[in-house]
Image (cartoon, rainbow, N blue to C red; front, side, top):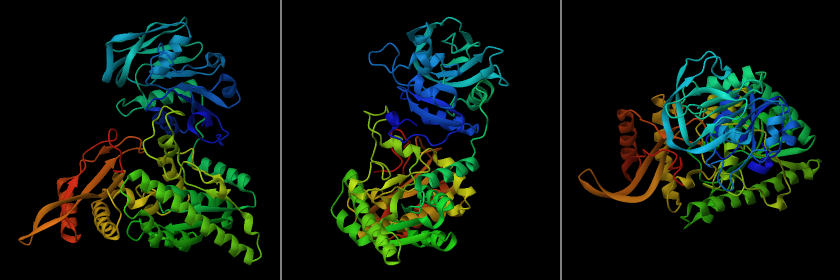
Length: 536
């Protein structure tokens, strides 16, 4: 992943890969995931990446992503034309196909018949992209331009109702273009199209597995860290837990995890983390109860971004103090107290994408992320981020191979700021008590009904809304709980889950009956986009 485009460190994986040039498509990350599902490593880089840079890497093929621009528009992003002289296969998707046509001598124009949504595609027989697939395919379109004149050496590889060249190919140079999106779920056989490109046309070895990743990651961690010591802020979530297990596999007792109780954790969170990592894995663990300190700083704060900033900066201060104590303890025992040079984080690639500003990447800032944004220079830590190349589903696979328990590996994502961003308005001990109790019921009922592991996230949100109710013939005026349950592949997009009515009724009934201070429960039926998964 290019630091220029995605604010990411240089890629540490050294094996063969498919390079994806990102032109700002909302589906670029999905393309990368689909390629990896073929057990081939994919790497996303900026559209500005030069042919010279690409030539220095073991690139077996290139995919040009889609994007929101038109190739003929002012300031539209353009590929380095020398890429087409590297001698590797190229696949252009939507805008990427139009770029290919534009740079290689074809003509791209605005279409009078725009294609958005579902469509039918008819493939030309003999094109290797569609080998072993039916001639007619359901596809997903999202474009207003099309190629009206093919570049020299190209021919149509298939058509839709409105486009005679919905797929194009240059068989001798192994250049291909698709006007539709094969990466999305709405193109049901799209993964097979990408697999044909990656394995048949590019001849990529299918050696990207989580077993090979663990082996390579451990070598990289040992190379980076040497004999120095590493601290990791353990939250109990999937990402930091897998990072801890992976780093512990690589360097053993050189790792110390610091678990900070910020007072914003779920019920029994502290006990579970200490049991799994301290007792089961025997990872060195320092527990810090700073709940009163955090709640004091958050008193009266209602703005969600301010909450995040306060929690982030306070975490840094608590972490600094805990690290100084570790150094002092080690010095006292005869070691070198300054050995803690490295800070490990469970940062994933989507974490980085969602936090990058629009000036650095076409993805706009949605909300700040707790793992991204840098540390104060005074901390003088070097970062160890072994999961930064991975998507969430890959992280879970790594966790299983490292023998982490299912309750950790398949735990649903939990925000870094904790329950603070699930309480709209001011954070108080009473509101935290209400939300914890309600959230425990949601989790318990989802697990009891076997729905917990079938969805991406399921949780309660406390709204700053009181309404009139009746309990035991008496008027009540109490809080409202919203239930948020979504399905997703990687958190980039999500849809609300059509949960059975009897389960919803059971959750609602239990919350109203058992959680003091609540008399109304609502169900959130919005998708991402336009909403985000978390409410703040």
